[in-house]
Length: 134
Image (cartoon, rainbow, N blue to C red; front, side, top):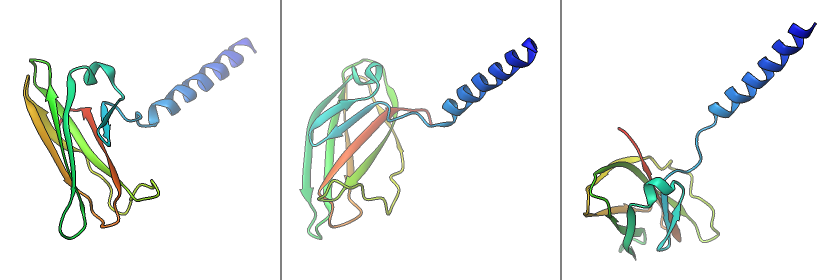
């Protein structure tokens, strides 16, 4: 009887742990929102600095973003980034999934990450950057 209780408890604990592993990690790394940097992974973000964030409109009305980041460390960082686009109500424009793109932030150098919104009604954006291997 005691063995059954221990096995039941162990299987419940194992299922709970396995269920937690199935969910993807929340945003990791850094997010730049309207010129502000949100840090999700402090060990990665401590080495990055936002130099400038330029937002313009193309002649066709699409949002065009150029974000310049500086790696303040001497090491190169393999990263992944994506732009997430929002309408005027703050709703994410989900018709086209934002894919993660590889990039390398070279030590002590600046890198420009650029994106153009997929829709004309885009009002704002979020740039997510995370350490990654590809």
